[in-house]
Image 1 (tube, one colour):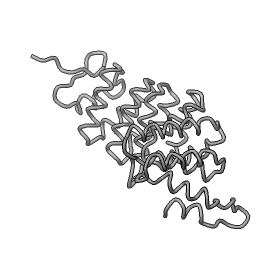
Image 2 (image 1 turned 60 degrees about the vertical axis):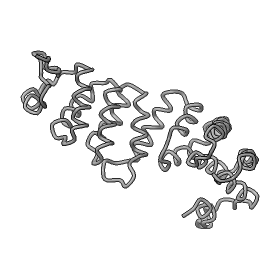
Image 3 (image 1 turned 90 degrees about the vertical axis):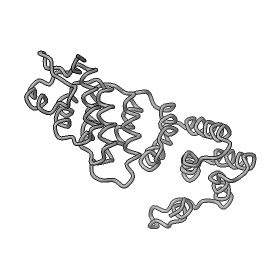
Image 4 (image 1 turned 135 degrees about the vertical axis):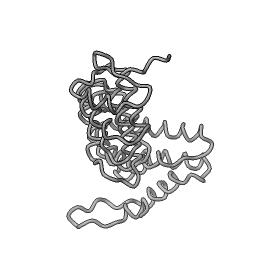
Length: 250
């Protein structure tokens, strides 16, 4: 289903929104046409920005999924759109949330949200989006990975609580990124879940990320010393305090 199929799809009469005007529809098509000459698309960008409708906001957010050449012009166009959307303030947050749940890359969306919300508000928005995912199989987990990655910039207990479940995700890359973000969060609430994840993890990459994290944080393995000691791969040891270390080279 294409963008305009969504706009044209009829909802029940009680919830019907306004029809998309033909002129706006034409400009949206130009806005999302990566093969159009930059000068021609630029006029469409301006026209869609000037429109205050929900359809226009959704289309502007969809523009961040389209990549055009030359890349410098593409970035300039997206920066202009980002500024315009951020200028509309919190009223576009429902549209941003919807896009964050659907778009594969969230960097531009997070940047816009960061211009609208205080730092804690952006963290909470990302956590709200993350809470919409589960740890089961997903055909395209990239959105989940991107959100967890972005949360690495927000250390603290609140981030740790939101990310902890994903150390048990079925996707190996999600587990790897969750472990990395939890260590970046720097809150020892994650210590027990990470130790439990290490003991049942089969991926060498994820196990190594967890070991490296414990090495950097110096969190002890209290309560799990025997199990961890048996599970440590070659080159790793526990010291007397129960912290994970690399074995000194002979």
